Image (cartoon, rainbow, N blue to C red; front, side, top):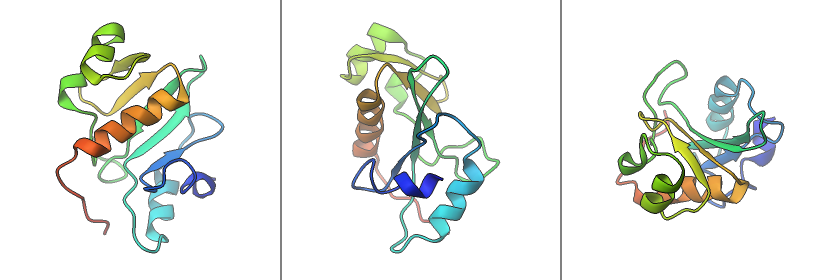
Length: 129
């Protein structure tokens, strides 16, 4: 399921797209990662919600953790709509949760832009165990 779009969404392999929308994905993702060679940490999952808008969800550090491997940038957190557009520089944003674990955008490309901008701002590379 997840593996089919692992390397087709972004050349880095660090962003995965769920084609059929949101579904239970965390256990599958950790299994997918364990088989990647060379090892790649997946940081974001993008998918459509029931309204047809796009979500970007951060991958947790562990399956049942509330800590993200790489949360969305702190200046974006808790912002919505035009305020988020201005701060992020990405038009069409809908929201970023106050903790930075999830965000929304009107388009697929916008959700990918949010993920890529976050990846570009990271200061470290977590290790896959």
